[in-house]
Length: 202
Ligand code: ADP
Image 1: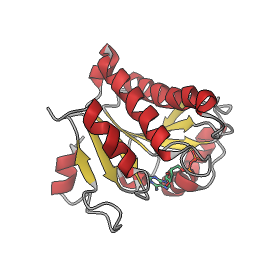
Image 2: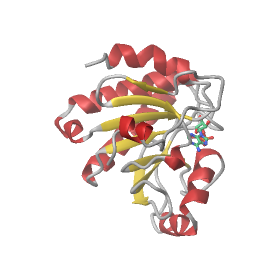
Image 3: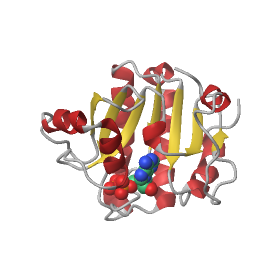
Image 4: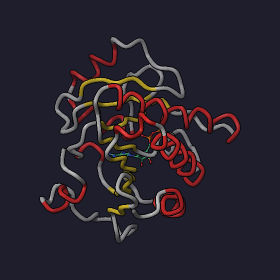
């Protein structure tokens, strides 16, 4: 599995067309990166989907993933019996360039008290599933930050904290790269606030 810098060298990642983010690939320590990119294009082990409880497909990143993967993905999802909010399930990736898709069901934002444990659960369960399935590289979209309405800064904080906690654990040592993949650039500043504190350069 190529590193982010290798992906860059081979032009598999290219600078964003958006004006929002002049430096689309921000590397923090050796394990954590922030990119602005279409998550369906990443040639890594595991890509996380922001799914719904029925695992029935939808709009946003879910629609993009389902379209790029092809109809077989939705067929496999239909066999899984849905997924609880705050948890995740893993499938094959079909026509996507990644190896596995992890379908995480984020909360529809209510209050921080209600929603944050569920959002953190999505990150924790996704990271565990990646390790259990031999994935060493994983990319997350901004789970719950689209139609589910989670405030971007609070979501970035929860995401960064949960990844930090996981990478500290023995099972976290089995991951080589965690990528925060922003699509629109609107939440990038929040990640840029928290990532340098939690993951200073090595
Ligand atoms: P949710 O229902 O969990 O809020 P959405 O799909 O509406 O999920 O949005 C989650 C995030 O995914 C949003 O920040 C949106 O900008 C982003 N997103 C949409 N398409 C893509 C894509 N192709 N790659 C990466 N992120 C994407």
